[in-house]
Structure formats: C-alpha cells, structure tokens
Image (cartoon, rainbow, N blue to C red; front, side, top):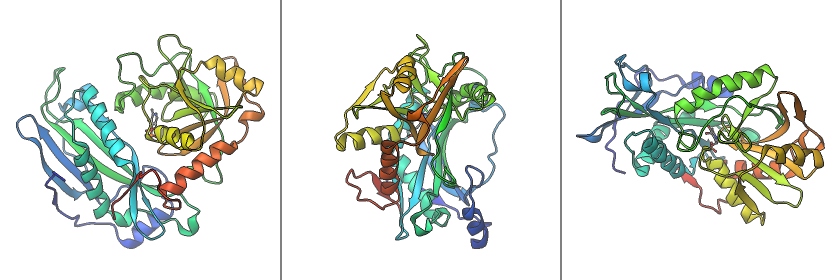
Length: 365
Ligand SMILES: Cc1ncc(COP(=O)(O)O)c(C=O)c1O
C-alpha cells in the first residue's frame, strides 16, 4: 500500500432505491457507480495525487496525446459478491501485471501491481453497495471494473507523454447469458488481422479494439456473433476472437489453445490451463491451423470448442463461417460437457461456492 489516497465522497450519490433498480437489470457498461479513482504521473513526481472523487466527466485539453496518438492501456476485471455478503476479485495481481506489460509496450509508466490492486480495492470498497447480490445462487451478476491509463500531456508530436493519468471506474454487469449458455457462431475474417510479430497484440490497448471493429461489422453482416482472427504472417493459424481466447477439445481428452506472443494473454485462459491440468488433462499451447479446426470438426476429432474471457467466463462455440463455407456438426451445435464443467468450476470459484484451492480469490470487503 504505497498510494496515499484522498477521498472526497460524492455529494450526489444515487439513492438506495435507484441502485436497486439499476442492479435488477444492469445490462453491461451502461451505468457507473458513484465514484472514480484517479492518480497522476509525471517524470519529476512519479505517481502522485491519488484520489477518489465523485464519478463525472473529465476536463481535458483537446491536444491531450491520448486523443491523437492513442497512447493508452486498460484492463477488465470483476468484483463478485459471495452469499455471505463479502466482495472479492479474481486474480487481480494478474490484471495488474498485464497492465504493467501493456504499459511498457505503449511507452507508458508502470503502475506497480500493488498500487494497481490498492486503487481497485479502494474504489470497490467505497462503492460496495453497487456489487450485486445473486439471490438463490442462480445469477452471475458482478461489478465490472475498468482500470485505464491515458496520456494526458497536451502536445502535438509523436513521443511518450510526460503527463499520464491512471483511473478506475466501475459498472454493474448482468449475467452474460440470459436464458442459458448458447453456442456462438463465428466469422473467420480473411481480410483483416489483429496483430503481427513485434506489434501490440499482447497489449490491452484501445487501438487493438478500434482495428477489430470493421472485422466485427463483417461478422455481424454474416449473421455471426464474433470474429476469429488468423495470424498475420501466413493467414493460417488461429489467434483469438475480438475479445476472447479459444480452446479446442479433442476426442482423446487433450485440449489445445493457441500459443501466446501476438494474442492477448487472457487471465481466464491461464486459469483454464491450470484447472484442466489439475483435472489430469493434457493442455497444449501451440499453433493451431484453421484447417485443423475445419477438418477436426468435420471428422469428429474435435469434440468441443469454447472461447473464454472475463465477460462471459466460458462460451461454447458452434458454427464457423467464412466466405464460401461453414462447418458445424454434432460437435458444434451445443455446449459440450467439458465446456460446461470448466465454466461451472470457474463460476463456483468466483462466486465463492467452491473451495479456492488455487488461492486465486482476493477479498476486498
Ligand atoms: C482480445 C482479447 N482476448 C482475450 C481476452 C480474455 O482475457 P481475460 O480472460 O483476461 O478477460 C480479452 C478480454 O479481456 C480480450 O479483449
């Protein structure tokens, strides 16, 4: 705990009745809590002026570097309320370390992982009434947390900013799947790529998401839920979806996930590697050829495919569609047993319904 945080409570917090109404049907990313966390950085002072204030608009110089050169990084994580009322995050130090790696890639200063966790904890603590309850154990509502770092120095010129701001905001999130877990239909883009060697693929930075939007539009135009990106060098190897990592379950029980380097190293992805290995499964992190996908599903060698990430936890994948064809068969039309089992294991852990044998949960309240 090295940040000295000044707290100025909001003078216009939402009433308990308003919060209750929002939490009954929060959707995703539409409502924000009463407060926000902010800390500034300059080369002379390092990180300073840490504060919690009322949530509200920022006043920014129009020449702020982030608006022109996209020098920014962010994270996505959740706070979960357990049945005893306590509030927890899942592996927050992994988000902190990933943000440090992203910031290094974007020539931003590193916020020490313990300061990152302290900032997130402080915001969740003051806005704890915004962490939804999940009556009767059925729901999967949570408080989505969005730490982000932006270049706030006002100048026009391409060089690392000398004034940077790190913030945390929070938004209640409803269950991702309403009415049961349903397989996604995916669009294979052969025109757009996400990341190349030496690029920013492994960093969580807004530019990667900006560049994915046109491919996502292409996916929607073909009635698909999400887009699949292939590697930039050969256009053969599966990388990831616009916002999720991928897993392929094989007939003999082993599972394959694309190797890292140009993909975003998901915290859910790495948790699944550990969980599956503990269950005695062989997990391979390797290049995965798109033809292995097409042929494996057609032959029945691939028995389940799923995607994973903080928002949806684990999502079954159904049909893969591309310009001129698609594969979907018995193996892809419903959530498979391992997909559902891993999903349940993670959700039970996050919501405190299973013993935390990995020590992944971090108590805030
Ligand atoms: C591009 C991309 N890949 C993978 C993931 C999954 O990462 P995590 O499991 O840490 O949410 C995300 C979500 O943050 C993402 O945006």
